[in-house]
Each structure stands twice: as structure tokens, then as C-alpha cells.
Length: 303
Image 1 (cartoon, rainbow, N blue to C red):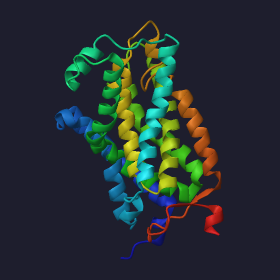
Image 2 (image 1 turned 120 degrees about the vertical axis):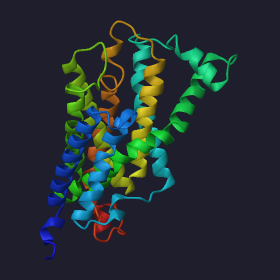
Image 3 (image 1 turned 135 degrees about the vertical axis):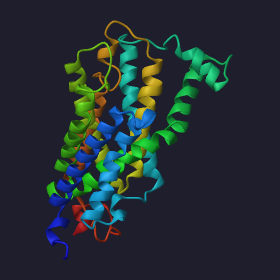
Image 4 (image 1 turned 180 degrees about the vertical axis):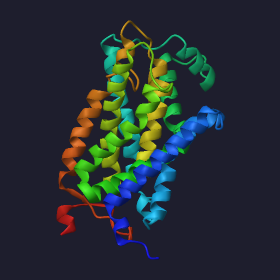
């Protein structure tokens, strides 16, 4: 029996992907609760979208090249700079306003020991720690982030863009991404400390949607998942291993820092606003049956 042509439409591809990623996530969650993955539970979760994308591509005859495997060096730099920029602004605001201190008492001794800088000035140790974490730690972090990026930005964003248009696509992908995380926050052990759960859910949901808009823009403009994988990995490494770790807690610090606080939302909102505006005159020129075409181009270029 031949394959029905309708299965190759963006709408159907999105539906098949979402059904597949939901089924995989439920299966991984069930197995993880039984201890099947051990300490690799988070890695298994993060690869559910990637595996779903590969399966959906096979089911719908979507070329794997359409995921976006090639890139240019400048876009890799943009992907790295984006999370560093919004994190520096957010945490810098927290430190300057006194909502959090700098540095945390336990950070400097550990940093000096790890970096082998016992007698160096404090500012130099901090700068070296930032570079160490945001460069060397990004590579192992990409092992996990690549799984999500193959799914969300390699498959979902391009297909949503062909179906709904670029602007709606990046917003819709953010909503899907946030909903996918929600069970782990509400019922699982993923979350912050020192703030109400409803506040954590609200801040995290907003952060995920805004960052998805920015990374969706990055995928459509670059035509590649590698810049978004770097952005994702750099975000995780910078926020969790450097900025959170170096910030001394005060009375209300927990309400502002991390993925469950509000400080990241302002710079991300500004970036997301710019990205949506920039996508206004952009269309996805990717033919998933002939992915050699330019992944992103202005309407003027397309005509």
C-alpha cells in the first residue's frame, strides 16, 4: 500500500510528532520511576523530543537533512552569546540592587581549587570561572540539549512555520515546550526552593516560552540546530553552574534568580519582542523533501 500524500503536510507532521513525543515521555517517566535509567534519567527525558523527531521523520518521509545539520561559525557565536547576554543582565541587576550578593561564600574557595588559582585576584578568578563553565562545560551539556533541539527546533519549529507562519510558529513551539516541562514541575521533583510552587510554575513557563521564541528565531534565521543546541547548553551551564552558584542568597533572592525566578524574564522579553518583529518579513523556504534549499529567507529574496 502506498503512503497517503496527506501525511506529509506540516499539520499532520506536527500531530504525529506531538503524539510520539508524548508517548515517549510517558514511557520514559514510567521507566525512570522504576530506576531503569539510574542517574541518566534527565538525559533520557531530554532525548524524547529528538527520538520523536527521528521517528516522525521516518513515518512522514521527511528528510533528516531538513533538521538542519549545517551552519556557519557566526551563528554558533550568536547562539553562545544570547544566553550569556540575558543572564549577565538579569543577575547583574540582582547584584546591583542588593537583591542578591556577590560572590557566595562557598564559590570562591571551590573556584580557586578547581582552577588552580589560589593567589589570584578575586575578579580574575570569577572571570576564569565564567569562561571555564561557559566554554568547557558547554560541550558535555550539549549531549543532552541536542536531544531536545533535534525535536523542538529541528522538527517542530520548521513544520509549524510552514503551517502557521514563522511568528506564530515560534510562539506555539514555546507553549508546547512549556507544557512538556509542566508535569515535572507540578508533580515531579524539578523546581526551585524558597518560593511558592505557583510562582515557580508561572516564572518557569514564561521563561520557557520567551526563550523558545528566541531559539526559534535562531533556528529559522540560521537554518541549523547547532546554534540553538549551543544556546540551550550554554543557558543550562551558565545559569545553573555559574550565576546561581556565585549569587549569595538574601531574604528575597529566590524570587529573582534561576529558572524559577523573575529576573531572566525582562531581558528575554526584550529579545523575544525583537525576534518576533524580525520574523515578520521572514518565511521558511525549506522544502522538507529537498532540504538543500535555503532554510530561511526574506520575502523579498523569495520573489
